[in-house]
Length: 489
Image (cartoon, rainbow, N blue to C red; front, side, top):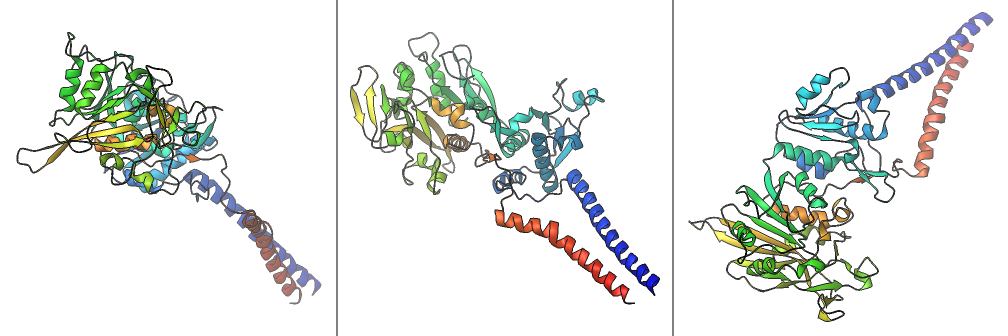
């Protein structure tokens, strides 16, 4: 009898050990498969590994043209690198949700010719680079382009992959529009983030010297960014102003103009101001100071702009989304020169409306006479002039736009690169008005300074107890019950 009890007791203990061994093995296998196949549930507060609804709205409109995301590091190796892992796992999410997106790996060490075949013109890449291709064209990015870097610490603090993927997909899917940036007048072009913003929105970007060439017929937008010197006019051998005038008045090509100027340079732009005056606007020879409440610097010349009322014209449409927010982002304008509006009503089919203004605490000082006050109260900082023309049979309406901003810093990288300020969204809304239907608006970066699970300490402790104590205790108890019963057989 004693040997019988020992036999059954030994079987019970062996059964318990086997069950625990199976559970441990199953956990190991599942963890390995989950790592290889990216079988994870995104429980981070910022949903770092998930596709946002804003990004999905863009991806879902891209059609069926195949897009391939190409890595140059083996998939297993990327899982051990924090930044590569995040980009790779997000790419896998895209592949799983959208049939037209593929993910592939090129071994550039073993097969260097494959790199040249797949990405023509590229003979060398970093192993951490990421390429996005549609089979005919491609975009190649270093891994840091998928993240936002703190300018002060130079460290990565947020994932900006959704924006990077969306802009690349749009560039490879939609027909491009041409945006021309003028040069030859001391403009800020190569140092401006505005060019990058247009490229990422799917525009082809070109610098143009109007003294040497005409504006291409296919151009949709002409950008004049803070010229130091004026444009040549009627009295000069080559009339640059006439080229700009013909471009923006052409209802067939729907040319649009954007002009940015600082208080320091606006008084030098006599010919350009005359052109703008035809569209009901011009820069005033003054600079603006705001109250401490509505400025961000001690000299009071970097202002927080005011958004217009909902019913104040086309310009209000560029900031409509902000008015529906409980805590809208600030739009920053530095070294502001006020803009004078010529007409309050439509004139010769041209309507002028405010996009941004100062608050009623602002004061404008003359740039010619020190400390001379020339205006007080609310003043326009950015305006849009809209010209409407009808087709020959009056069945369709066509629009040309002139956007005028009394600040050059509006397009600085500090204010455009990121989701802290409203500057970027306004530029994207302007692009929409210019005919660019799809722009990557609303795609904010996801901060991962704290990647902890979005659970409370109490919840964390509860799950710890369940997995480390309760479940093992249950199986141990089951084993003991079996062992006790077998003892009495």
